[in-house]
Image (tube, rainbow, N blue to C red):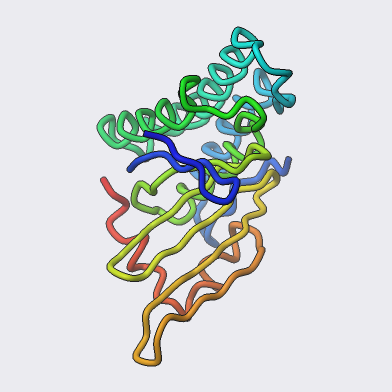
Length: 202
């Protein structure tokens, strides 16, 4: 069941370049082009939801948001994501964007956020995260290992906002910031990010 906490909807568990490691080669370039072109052909940011009682309009916007996310993921699934991994992620999206649970005053997930989310998973080789959304239409990814939690809000154009909460000998430590996808491993290095990303969830 979807719940709302501090204007963030939590579901159960643009720049056109995908950041790549040096020397990644032609494969990564082709992958980047495939994802970016898919969005350029058919996906545009969605507008805000209209007034109360317009269920048909809201339903259309939510279905469009689901399609945006799934097109992005399917574009790269044959290369990087197993069918089971992809299907479980799609179920999270369907639950998150369920019209029966969605607040009509919130904006459905925008395409720029979906594209950043997919490119982030590719770059980090991350296991499947918990999935949520903010009231302004940004996807939220979260990973929890024991008492340690990482939350990343995906904004358009590869920008992300991150929040870390970890338990140390001195107590609970928190940190937050904003950066580009390509710098996430660097800014998170002090917090042992592989505890959240290892094995790719495949």
